[in-house]
Image (cartoon, rainbow, N blue to C red; front, side):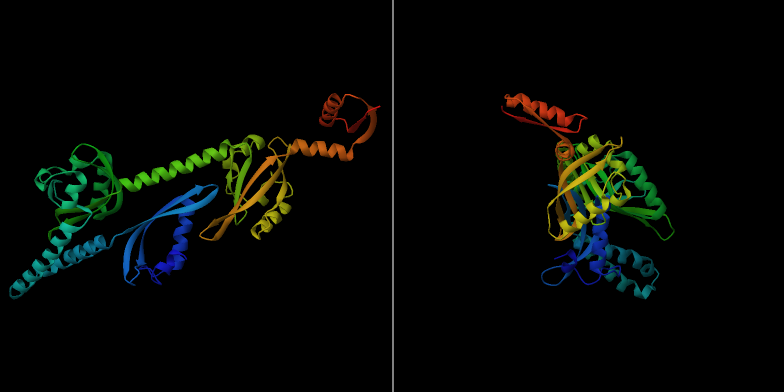
Length: 393
């Protein structure tokens, strides 16, 4: 089951859910994470908007996606209602005097609805005047920032609750240029001085003469999400450290036969750094001898034949190293994403075996088997192509 099975057939932008989901997944896999808005369907068939954070992680050699979903129905409803109120405001004030009572009733009803949302929404809302002084906050703001009542904040400059003055300057600049900012990360200062990670949006409201009337902003405490993200990154780093500290060679390829992982043991043995290897196809790398045979082996692994393969790599110094590797399929959402390969260096064993097969034969005698065996090993490792056979007299 994919995320599109829990979504309407099409997303608000007109793309099919299946097509867009795959694009979002691809972006997350390429960039490491992807944060976006999505339309889902509840069990009763009702649609609801949500924010989704996809984070790529590697666990036990497998690439996975961690998904964090948050229902933003209330926020979207608030934004839509507020936008409608703003769009209709100029038109309403130009109505004829005979329409003022009717317009007033509508505004009162809209204000009542807005106030209900303002008081009950879980996101913090801060409204400031043209000079940047706070003129209104909702209960969620007080709870998130640790204040007992609104009077403690009203009249304060908004700069007093910003944890990063430089970030505020950037936000204000964009707000003045575009009239709004969306989904910007910031740090806000609580009453006790501690900083919290937040995700915010803001809109610049002007009067009929084009002068700044107020700034309406809303924010969400994402400290927990940030903590989880850091834990995921730490876990990923720990796994990478385990992989890099392994004495075995460990590397991985994707379905296009591109290298997507190259551990420290391989760097040390081949003298090729991972940044020179990763994202390059096997067939384009001279380091792989018999690359066609190796690619054929990978095809067999995809078909379920997970046997061993003797892989020969040519080091940067021109030396050949032989490895006995075994591949395992990397699965993600039951889809094959690549192959993880783990192997050991068998160069020395292979060279000894080659001398036994192709060397000359000699017949010697020695009753000391241990010293004879040691002599055999020395001969096998030497440049002489020969075999010593020791028999008791």
